[in-house]
Length: 57
Image (cartoon, rainbow, N blue to C red; front, side, top):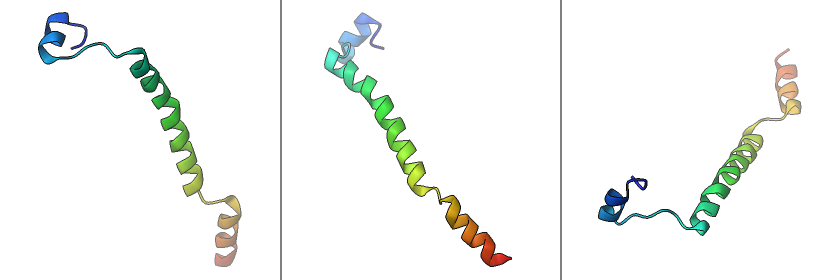
Protein backbone atom coordinates (compact mmCIF):
# COMPACT_ATOMS: atom_id res chain seq x y z
CA UNK A 1 0.00 0.00 0.00
CA UNK A 2 3.01 2.29 0.37
CA UNK A 3 3.35 2.47 -3.40
CA UNK A 4 -0.08 4.09 -3.82
CA UNK A 5 0.53 7.71 -2.72
CA UNK A 6 -3.10 8.64 -2.03
CA UNK A 7 -3.74 5.52 0.03
CA UNK A 8 -0.45 5.85 1.88
CA UNK A 9 -1.31 9.42 2.86
CA UNK A 10 -4.80 8.40 3.94
CA UNK A 11 -3.42 5.66 6.19
CA UNK A 12 -0.57 7.81 7.50
CA UNK A 13 2.09 5.63 5.91
CA UNK A 14 5.32 6.53 4.21
CA UNK A 15 8.35 4.84 2.71
CA UNK A 16 10.84 3.61 5.31
CA UNK A 17 13.80 5.81 6.12
CA UNK A 18 17.35 4.71 5.34
CA UNK A 19 17.58 3.53 8.95
CA UNK A 20 14.44 1.44 8.47
CA UNK A 21 15.79 -0.15 5.29
CA UNK A 22 19.08 -0.93 7.05
CA UNK A 23 17.27 -2.63 9.94
CA UNK A 24 15.13 -4.64 7.55
CA UNK A 25 18.21 -5.71 5.57
CA UNK A 26 20.07 -6.73 8.73
CA UNK A 27 17.13 -8.74 10.04
CA UNK A 28 17.58 -11.44 7.39
CA UNK A 29 21.17 -12.51 8.20
CA UNK A 30 20.54 -12.12 11.92
CA UNK A 31 17.52 -14.42 11.72
CA UNK A 32 19.38 -17.00 9.62
CA UNK A 33 22.34 -16.96 12.04
CA UNK A 34 20.09 -17.38 15.07
CA UNK A 35 18.26 -20.26 13.39
CA UNK A 36 21.51 -22.00 12.45
CA UNK A 37 22.90 -21.65 15.97
CA UNK A 38 19.68 -22.95 17.49
CA UNK A 39 19.64 -25.98 15.19
CA UNK A 40 23.32 -26.69 15.92
CA UNK A 41 22.65 -26.50 19.64
CA UNK A 42 19.65 -28.86 19.44
CA UNK A 43 21.35 -31.40 17.16
CA UNK A 44 22.78 -34.32 19.08
CA UNK A 45 26.40 -35.04 18.36
CA UNK A 46 27.43 -38.11 16.41
CA UNK A 47 29.26 -39.45 19.48
CA UNK A 48 26.04 -39.38 21.47
CA UNK A 49 24.27 -41.48 18.84
CA UNK A 50 27.13 -43.98 18.71
CA UNK A 51 26.82 -44.49 22.48
CA UNK A 52 23.07 -44.98 22.26
CA UNK A 53 23.34 -47.44 19.37
CA UNK A 54 26.17 -49.43 21.00
CA UNK A 55 24.11 -49.92 24.17
CA UNK A 56 21.29 -51.53 22.20
CA UNK A 57 23.50 -54.11 20.53
